[in-house]
Length: 242
Image (cartoon, rainbow, N blue to C red; front, top):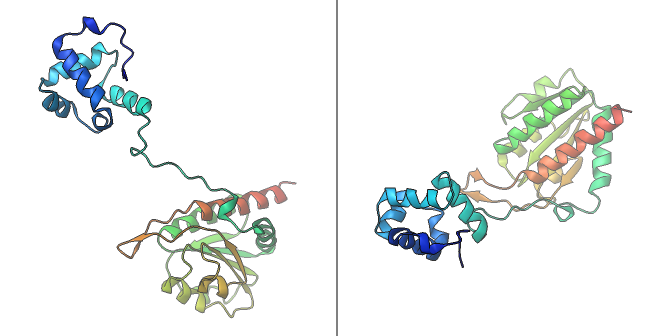
């Protein structure tokens, strides 16, 4: 397969043809290589490789590599993107979102809680809710004295975000408020049978495997949880915007 749209190979020098044949035979490797790697493997000079790049009509070596990546459709360079769809959520997710939206709409206080990467979602969700006029805040410290803070408040909704729903620090944090009648707990979790979901009054669940490396580092996708947070915000905004 000819990789370059070059009409007349007979005009190429012997060195150019050597580089051409090497790249043509090793296109899947070349997209990872440097100029000097190609030069060394093709037994030519670095300057010869760059002259060949320009002769092929590219302004730079990275531009040529991008071209090779596209035409060879190299799948291992970037894993296929998996976008969430209905299969990531239970069939009654719309009803659950409406119920939780009603809770949030009537709440005097909304607190979003998460630790680690879920803490970033908590901060984001709290900021977005505040932007549309709700009294919202985030907590990312599992040792935060939430019980003391809630002593002079009522009608609070605590949105707790955890993919596994089993993190001991998260469960310990909830133990202090689970019996508080003025607090409704909503779990956003990837495990509907987790202790977090069972401790909560309501749960917004999704399907996403818990993926960790070195035990502590959570690489699980946060897209489903983010989608649910976004859905709540947009439903609430549509209600107050009427």
